[in-house]
Length: 499
Image (cartoon, rainbow, N blue to C red):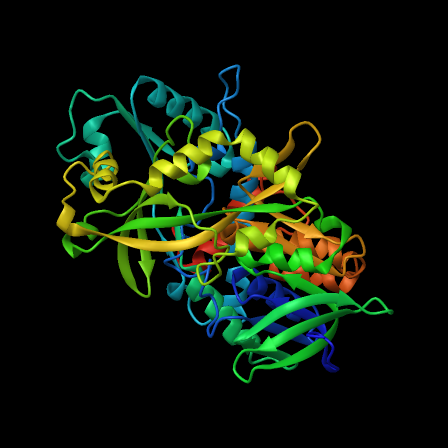
């Protein structure tokens, strides 16, 4: 049999995938218990090469300051900011953890991965400008967003984002919000920094070009992780007490191979991404903001357009998009058979039902796939009227696999967030989904720890360490304005951010 080989190693924890999630969980666990033996397996020849890479979507520093899809308008006309509050607090928790790691010399420099970039929303038309005004009024009342500004004056907005307003029709009704405490994060650089630190610790092994092929349990309840060494073309079996599947789009197939009951009913729908990348440094230097618009009616949340200042490997960049595409791959470096092989008896009904209920998404993807460069440039010109074809090139981004899950009423629903699936005994967990995953990685991993390591997380020792790493741990930044002001000032000082 393919997997009939002896145990060649043991670990307390096995992390599958060398992205931001595994890096975050590995560092958290090692800080909480330095004696842990951790092995990490990555199928590619470098870390952070898929969804965590700076060019593969993860990098906007999602904190709900400008993303309009996180603040929907309810049927009564009011704005629901509850999801925005959750995401904002999650990003504040991430910043606390990163600040701790910098202070403890676990990371070398904040400048390598995070920079202050204003976060803005920009809309046009009567309906959209009224929505943005109501959103501003709702958010301004909360201490998270007290620094937010609103304007519907062309000249005022031009002072914020001159490229967006240059040669725009003066009769067009526009509105914008701006908040200066936003950030841009290079999650590829951050992930590499976290793994550099991890690999300096005792009892940590990072295995590149190693693909996990199968997972099963032995009689004593330990997991047996079957791995192929792609370099030597040999197989090994690792025995471990806990497995985390943080393999991006590759997580769903591995979760299915675990055969835990909690994996039943989950499916995945892959969506590829593309950006227009500015190649003119003069234009790049004239824009310094993340400017998010409002998705067109009938389009999914992933389609929210933005003109995005990024800092990648020390250089300012300017991107516009995303433009969606369709591929049956679950990973950028995956197989075209990924979607087909993920369909099982337990998830085929939810996947079919989700497809039936998401016909607009199918139409949207078809329209995106057949887009010409002229079509893409015309979309860009809605945000940058003077954009010239010769200043922009198309760049392929990463793959996202949206979660499909069972639903009692609809049979199957398509989710656009992230979800951690944990076995009942806490011995295995997998992260499924996409945005805003990377920005909320610390909160997501804390939730995993509280589920899978519940007893230890409730211990005096681990609780004290958590308070050291994340001063607001166990408290609510959303409910305590003074606590937010104190922690935000402290983390901003360490991270070199506007506070």
